[in-house]
Image (cartoon, rainbow, N blue to C red):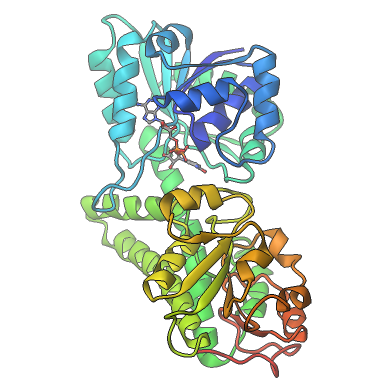
Length: 450
Ligand SMILES: NC(=O)c1ccc[n+]([C@@H]2O[C@H](COP(=O)([O-])OP(=O)(O)OC[C@H]3O[C@@H](n4cnc5c(N)ncnc54)[C@H](O)[C@@H]3O)[C@@H](O)[C@H]2O)c1
């Protein structure tokens, strides 16, 4: 058992704190947001994450997990301090490290001897060494403070599973002692066979950005293929399937559609590009610029399709939007492609009514002027056009014949290539799917929109 603290209790930090407690460690977590701390201490998870809340309550009840707002308390308590604060996009695309530095500066004066600070936030290469020198300058004289970077790869929606049984554990360390302490923290997953990769600080920082850059590139690649399929009269879905059977390529992250969003991939791609530019690495800059441009272009494409499907203007068109979370199984609307499309539709004069199973409260904070409907049929009431923008399983279960009864016009754009187009067609809908101009089962019925 290790006495662990977690600094920052957002998506990453709260999940990390709960899962480390569940692995048997004594955990004390801190945040500058005292409301978050009060809710967490009361057993409430302030965001949607399947399975997290019962695990939080279990570990609160077991006395392994506590919350505080006192840096003095965590400094005195912890042997390993995990930094899990946000690293949002700065004004010119670079990562804003102010939260990382503020958290480390607040912790440093309270550090007890022989402790380790392990960063988990996603940061530009070089950050760990900056944090290390700041902390050592502030920490009480004579304290042995080590620093490591332990990037996190969890996926929202699968955060508990990814934390308890990750694909791999990456440790950037500068001492044997740091490695030993982190091996002790992760003893259970390591005993279960999770691969451990130990490397220097800079490489560990880069692994996370390289992983996200690769995933983003894969998504933008298939979306570029969707564009050429539309022009060439081909169908991106069987193309993706055929590519995916190649073991060197793999099927995952090869789903065409509206592109990526959320609190990580877009900002990490831009931050990585900013770092590459600062280091003068043009190849990475041009690769990631293309990835970002292709991704943003998907949003324009959906708005253009909507405009065309509405007869050339969106002014006064009633548009029902299905899904506003950046991806299913999440209530996160940070850089949500759907929300960006909704904003543009509204700017073009459309009357937008939207539905999402869990993300509407977060969306309403960002876009209070949109109409939020309590059900799919309420959102689609008298709609001229339906847009499917987040591929929740609930939407695949919609009965298109029943929905046909409430809309003004049976026209749907499936921007996630996830609905059964033949089923919708058979119920009398005109179906537009990004990247698909023809498919034997329904091509005679599909009116392609270019
Ligand atoms: N969300 C994910 O799925 C995910 C996955 C892997 C990595 N990451 C990375 O993890 C980091 C955190 O992301 P997140 O999504 O959890 O962000 P978040 O915004 O949900 O949480 C950050 C938390 O840090 C708190 N905080 C800010 N300054 C603080 C300070 N000085 N002291 C204590 N707490 C402070 C905030 O109040 C907030 O609760 C980012 O670098 C992100 O890129 C996130």
